[in-house]
Length: 292
Image (cartoon, rainbow, N blue to C red; front, side):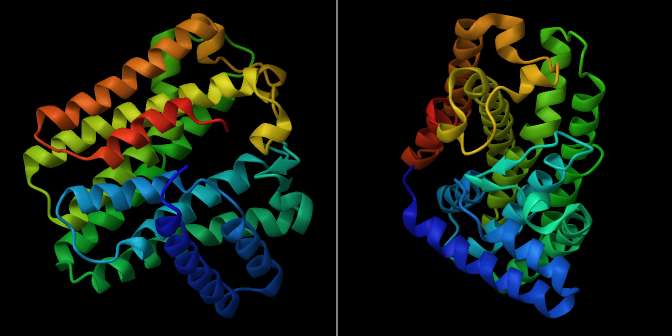
């Protein structure tokens, strides 16, 4: 993946958030938070936010705002891996947080990371000189995407669907919430921070929704086509948990074709709105073609 400079800037911002956690939390929980935040990762959501911010006319440094989104994403991975959820041992090529720091510390760390993310987003928006209304809308967008109407709601539906066969429409609804909501929020927050017009925000919303769903379809495909060492997490766990996936519903070729169509749809949404961004086009394609 490209964007090494952006990812490095986000890593610095995440280290600052981890240091804030270390000063405010019990050391066991703070250590688990730091472990979750500072591990390796694609930082796709952060990079999307920064790329959208620039494509929408933003001139400041949006890396701290992008880091706030990554805090929410990291929290979701911590809880997703817990024994009561997917019970996974490996994440990003190393032991999961609960394997390294214990279940209690991991569960508490995930909870603590939500207000950390909200505070980080508000502070970053303020530093960018955004109005109080825009600051509030950014935090609301992030929290809505991570809550019952977004990521958490999608995770619940995903767990409830284990051992059942969902049709394509039901599966798409789960994926748009579980994974797509936070990716779409990252895109929308980039536009909000840059002061994008309503027509541009509408186009960015369509782009974010398409990329978010394409990303999850690609995840489903990688779970059945890649190895644990390639993924940095346990391969084949969807089948082990009896989950409905796009390869199961559409077949591998059908799922791959659907993901490519969504990437095309995302790029068309930008083009139709007059947004010219090679970076955003690349990220839409990367969401589908990534190796892990």
